[in-house]
Image 1 (cartoon, rainbow, N blue to C red):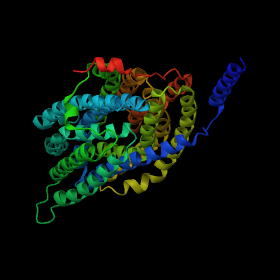
Image 2: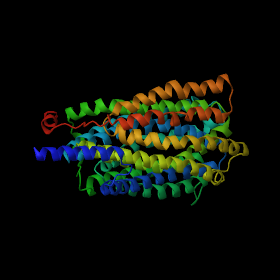
Image 3: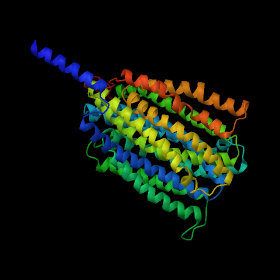
Image 4: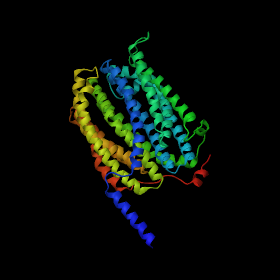
Length: 479
């Protein structure tokens, strides 16, 4: 009886401490967060640097080139969102099985994710390479923008079959707490892409200047090298999972059903977000090239300040999946409180960074005075909305979705995109003929409004759900 009472008192004390402590005293949490977040954030930085280098170099070619590549990038964002859904499902399930140290199940999950990823990449490649002008014309009527974007899209579309392979392989490594492989590969891609951009865009080393076509060729070659290194590392160097080519020929019906079950809302959220991105491109494409260029520049600024938060969010997601998969729910509650405080503080800092970095950032672009003026207006809106974005987006993704409640974020995004964001922007633009910055504010309004949903949801702690199965169930599903 005495022992039972002591156990009960210990449980109550732990629950109380978890409920009220702002920062966890668990040093392993901070150690894991830093070790995971730094390479992931650096990889995000390098990915940003590659896109930014493209953006700046192409920016020297004028508003039409910048706008054409921006519109093309919105179509490409559909691929990234869909692959993000496939990758996100892989990470959620694999991280929980990693908490149980079940490597064989992770191998099955990686194989399933690769099949879905290649399927999405093939479809997107086919559309992009065969119908580039038609796709561009969906978003803008500016002939100059369509012409430049079509040249870029026709070539860049072939990277859509390479990108999923690299992403699925590096995601498999992240799930087992080996995030550095993605960083190393991104460093190689960075130097290669920038070098090839310089050569092909401006015509160096005896080659002709190819403009946006050169940028597309440089990215294609970089993706080939990036994928090659990912394959070599995962199949030949990694010692944790020890994946082999034959593992990608195997399937487990039980885990396939789970992947589909939990992947539908995850990928559904990516589809909703893709529709949102495409709708935003269409709405802002209603304006002339100077406004579109401003949206492109502001988008790059947003990526710059948010990528560190995204890296932390991915790290939190891995820790969350591992902790929930191991059944350590009280520990996870404490982690969740600490995570919220960290992201709220990052949001405040990010808003300040946008305001301070705006002018230096704009000066890097060779665009018209009109585009610069519009960029300043949009950046002022971004400084406010990014504060909410840095709290709710990583908390909902890194805690709620990674913790097992995979459908909540999908439902939340669907409601906001179709009932708030798109309708308010269309009404502002088409009915009230509002200024571009007002329409932009409507398109970003959900980043703040979602905070009022995220706060009570996260602190209810009803999102912690163990999605793993026992060995008998998994063994029954072998093909």
